[in-house]
Length: 485
Ligand code: ADP
Image 1: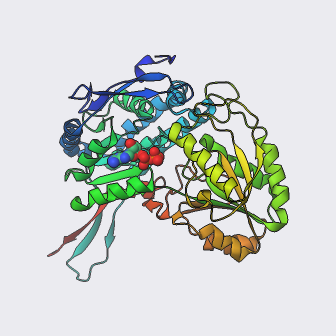
Image 2 (image 1 turned 30 degrees about the vertical axis):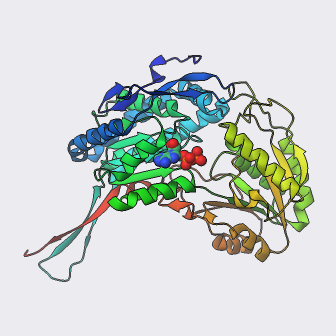
Image 3 (image 1 turned 90 degrees about the horizontal axis):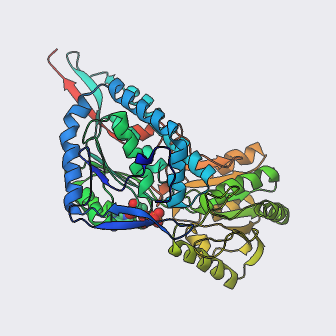
């Protein structure tokens, strides 16, 4: 282990089932590597079906006592967990950079963002109010009650290894649902460290379980189980559709945060400096590996050349380097397949007439590093117009009038985030209302924050995370009719 931690117990290489840190029954393990170097960081248990079933059983056993606690008691545990996460930002950031690759500053930012969901849902857990409906008869009352859905499963991706854990588990726990979480096998240690801190905070045994290992056997138990009433998944649309099919037989409640193909539109009347700063934030965060990264940058004729020049100047400031090196702004991509996809998208675009307009300075190269590029002359017949690139490639498409721009923006089967830049109030409303996305972002770069609902329409998913909506995903509505009064 090359990690230097103030609290070494945060680096855990075990699953957590029913309050015990354990290996897989089979004894099998998987290796986890550092994407900047390819070096092995450690191993994790390769949990199979029996281990996953044990975690589900432990969660089920813990449910009655957990749901019986008051919202205030659950909130107190969540607040303690929040405080421990905030106390350990530096260690958690180091663990994340080692397994995921993102620059330390971004990793620490993600830890604080992850913590914000714990605090938010500790608070929202106290506000799961029901209400009383006026009844049709004088001697009847109709009470609308909010109750925890039950044992919940979370399957999370590698691009936000901490925030995706807390965005799902904190509202579940606050609502009174025990959790079984399966983190990405590429980035399990951030999740394990968060669960270690939850153990330190004092959550009862069985309330919070984590199984690590290969996805398919764990996923088949979680989706096939009648005990698991709810599945929350963040990842690709392909796997989301598979999990939805697997969940059909048990009519499971689902939250799915899937892929995006975000358009970012720059109109002639935009503040170009603001649009460039926002494009940099949206496009290059996490080396372009986020589901809300601008995938298609649509620029109106009148400012196309000026925008491209300004963006090139900003890209020239990027620093491609291992995430633990001072000043790094772009770390490695997660694995070789990610690099291959980025390379293939660039080659396909160039073959279809795009121009390599600008590049970031040559920093770290080889291995899993990809140099950020700007492509001009992008068109809709290129792969990058239709698939998520998930890397540091900024393709600039050109459009004429507003209607053409909107049609281009909506020309995708996804609908997660859409960004646009204009100083014209009329246009702001017209375009904002017509963009087909769960999140529309005008004149700023981001929208991921604990108090705002995050989620998509079309093939980008089902449900919302964060905000009050995020806890509703773990609550059932019971209509309680009382007659004969
Ligand atoms: P990404 O493209 O972001 O890697 P994936 O959808 O492949 O997204 O992975 C997201 C999460 O889904 C990870 O935890 C991964 O292990 C898990 N996953 C992948 N395939 C399956 C499967 N067949 N069943 C259950 N989980 C899966």
